[in-house]
Image (cartoon, rainbow, N blue to C red; front, side, top):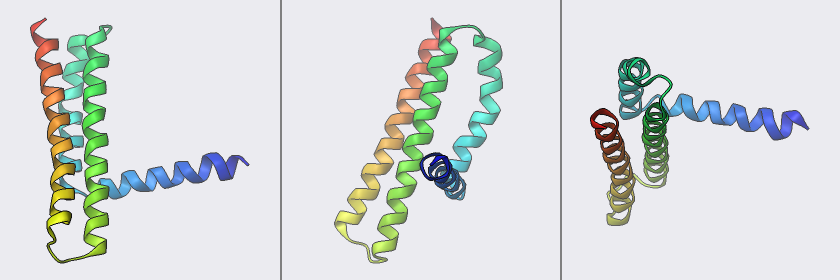
Amino acid sequence: MFRRYVWKPLKCALWGIKFACGDRSFRLEILLGVIFFPFFAFKFWGDLKLLLLSLGYFIILIAESINCAIEKAVDFTSRDIHPLAKQAKDIASAAVLLALLNFTLISIYCFFN
C-alpha cells in the first residue's frame, strides 16, 4: 500500500523535477535561488518576510514546471507551428512572467518595509 500510494507518486514527482531541470529556464531559476537565498536567509532570518520570499520563489518554480510540461506536450503532439499551439505556449510563458512580477513585488515590499 505504501509503495503504491506514496513511493510510486513520489518517484514520478522526482523524475518530473529531473526532467524540468533539463530545461534551461528552470535551471537558471534554480541557480538564481541558490545564489540569492543565502542572502535572503541572512537578512530576514526569523522574519515573516523570508516566508513570503520563499513562497514567491516556489511559485516561480511551479509556474516554470507547468510551462515546461505544456511546451513538451505541445511539441509532442505536433512539430508544426499551429496558432493554438503558439497560444498555449505563450499563455504558459505569461504565467511564468506573472510569477516573476509577483516575486519582484514581494522583494520590493520586503526590502523597503
